[in-house]
Image (cartoon, rainbow, N blue to C red; front, side, top):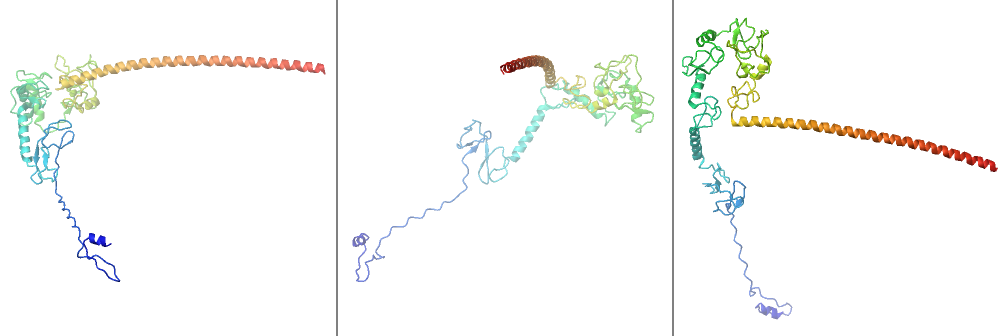
Length: 398
């Protein structure tokens, strides 16, 4: 014990009734360990940039390409509030939602870009196609000349507002409303009516402003006919409540030119300038009026009944390709139908052969059953005879 006390460098104190204890003042103590520094948590910005294509987090901030997909790195803008590097397409900071300082400049750039693009193209005034390059003078959709189509459409646009300011290239027939009549001719290309005569006839009706009781309006082409007329003068559709006068040689219903004017196709005209008889009923005409073409958006026809005359987009490469695809599909469907018919014949023959085979097997089974029944009957008779002979022998022995 004293050795342990000396080891700690303490003096001993003896007593008769007490133990020797080390002095607290002389005992050396180990220094307390220093307190760990308090860690200060700060907002550490992520040291990576995210690829806009594959969303891979690239740790190399100086890299110009993504390490995963090798896509070029998009330029960034640094937020003024939190200094976070955002993508150039971001309108606000991802961290603190601070608006991007490039918004105003980007909007002005977009406006300038749109104005530049609009200056690089021109809109066709005939079919409203707006993707024509300024380097071309012909519309890519309807193949109309740039200046000519502008004048022609201007004539139809200004006809409702000013009757005196007519273009100098075309005139509108007041009898059938045909617009593509050249000023070099005095008769309408569609109805063969005289220019001045038809103008006077329709002018009296247009300037009156009241509904006349001596006329009726055609439901197909909206032409105003005389009250005594049994059919429309333009499209030959019957008047409401009346039956059209039959012709001596009416055209066949399968004729391509025998189509109502309401279908916006070319009518077939006789030598007298009057259109041939219309083979379409009023309900069919009303249905055609509500049809809208998927190619040119004009009413009165669809892609099935479209022609080069009534559809401005008929000769577009996309429409030509679509018609070829439909034609090929029809051929494929016809071939598939023929194959299906042949397969049905083969299936019928197989079923017939199988049925005949089953009938033959059934007959053989019936014949075998008959033979077995006959054999069993003969066997029973033989057994009965044998039993009878055995009984007779037994009786003799007795």
